[in-house]
Length: 277
Image (cartoon, rainbow, N blue to C red; front, side):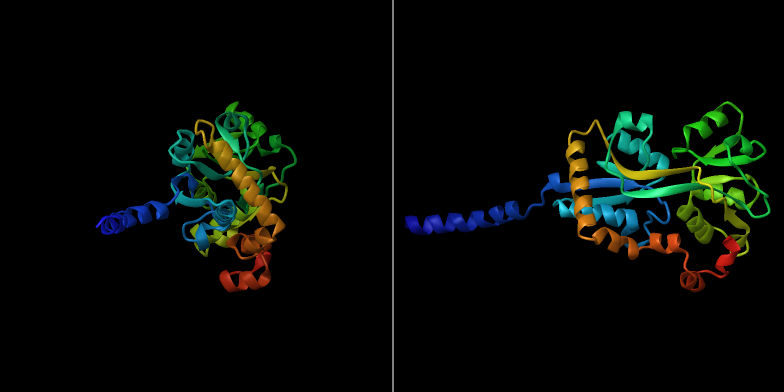
């Protein structure tokens, strides 16, 4: 009788044991948030874009499951700062941000340039050369401290709004003269938000305003941020050593926008690449 009782109790406890053993480890989940930033991030791109794919795979190498949500950039910054999410992606270092966040190793680089209408005869060598022009700037984005200082002091005319997309629209409508943004990002906006009539009117100046690294950020107020940064960095190293990093780049929208190959343009655009010379 005792033997049957033991078997019966083991049978009753088996589902509970099974549920416990298959319960996901919440400590290995990483909640990340970012904004739409073509071609780095987009909810409409394959696996949310090249930056997202790199980070998700890097965390996966270390046994973490990273999930990415999309929100407006101004909300992204404040919600990560407040610890509502574990981290965010695609940020450059600034002194103020370094007080609040831990930064991962560099993930991708960007070259920020001035976009303008072809009809605007624009050239510059120093920032004072920008004095005759109005500049569209996006809140929460990092520009050079020299540029921001000159805008604050009134030496340059700068207008801050909430999104890069609207700045590109304003540029196309001649409501601002210049718009500084990463090269690939700018042309992605040209393609995705401007009409086919307006697309050929936009170009960029080849002199970069700045070249910077893009990182993941994790709030210092979150106790597990240090370990998440270390895990992400280890995973990035493994991706690069295994050539997976380059494979992801080659299989991404980012590579298409950066190479500007004639074949790709002929397939995706309604006009020729020499219009961007």
